[in-house]
Length: 330
Ligand code: BT5
Image (tube, rainbow, N blue to C red; front, side, top):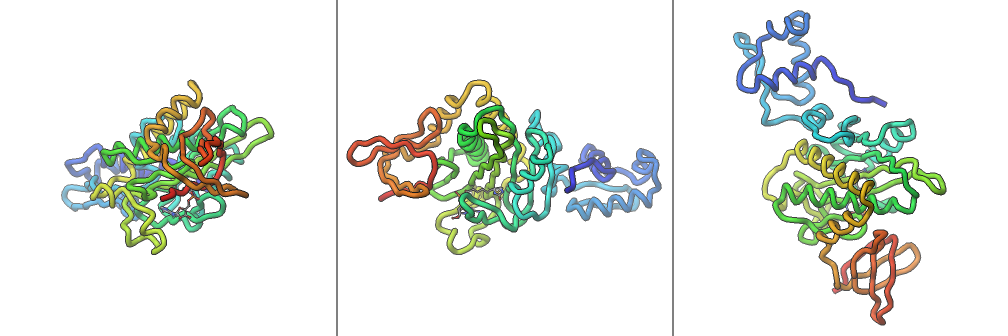
């Protein structure tokens, strides 16, 4: 398993980025790195292969087109303003599932904040063995390792914490807030734009680690979705009418996730709950909840101080739901 390391290509990229408007000569680069101009040219070729657009002029040298930067670990890590989330990244062009890989890293002792990112997933997972459609080149698929010192029963609150971070990030880019659907969906105009999958490794009374998997439909067009999802899913591009940089978005997402996670550890679930309620629009609406072994119906009242969904059945009976799928009732 490969962990990300800074290479000479990345050092050259840093210099090219600094010289954003002018060319950097092959001679200057060869002097800086103490290698021949031919060696520099080979590294430039490798940089182009990484997906960067570099103009080469025999007289002037090299210039980087900064408008079309590729989605990779180096770009995500550049100017990332977090203190621990995403500071170590393992990036893949294609992977089965970022959650599976993050769990492997965590079992081998990866630190809190370690993130796995993929450009595409072949076995992107939803809850209960469901699939998460993960085409290449357009969306965000990331899994973050967290190691909170708390009992396993609190883990679902981390899903809600992540939901607040995702909703806040979407608001920043879309200019209007999305809706949260308990427990792990983010919707716009009643269509799913993002999903969260929390997986945990624990002892009876302590969490060893939690992996927060986040999938956000960013620049995917409707046509890229399988037929059965077209009516129930959407993307930021579909809603905002323009492409949004995945690099910017994931950096903001990590920053918001870190902010809310820190707040949760310091002040408990209450501030998260309050923020979550701000995105909850199902209050008072009739819903059907499919749990493992029963289906219940009632008016959704909100979430309680533990993060459980509260329903009021027709007869007035109040129910507390800790897991399941929520569907709107007409
Ligand atoms: C989820 O499950 O919503 C959790 C999705 C988590 C995905 C991330 S991507 C990074 C990380 N690595 C992984 O392998 N997973 C996580 P659930 O609530 O079970 O919803 C799954 C359902 O959402 C499916 O049955 C479809 O109906 C729908 N769906 C599948 N792909 C979708 C997509 N790209 N956009 C919107 N809806 C989708």
